[in-house]
Length: 139
View (cartoon, rainbow, N blue to C red):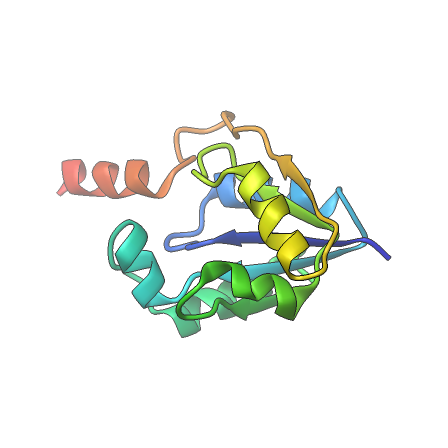
């Protein structure tokens, strides 16, 4: 069985997220999605609108997702030991270094592959920040 790991904040779910998770699921047999903790999301971007407990429930309800869990506090790579993936799927806009992920996996006794998922471009609703901007412009 090939386990795929995908991560993200998933603040306001949109078609880009569905595309990302659908394509990630195609890489293997099981898709485990790690939803960023509020504190980690705030440190990396900004505080999400939707609380982490609701975001993980919503992501877990999506068809391609076999299991959704909250990320870890501290070293974000520690989740590799918890999930033990074969493949880590990255979104087109996720600023992670694939080589660093592979090396962090090796430190934890894992042989990982990293796959970059293409951008979804069939809708104007393909990004959380775009949707927030549209909502602000309409109000």
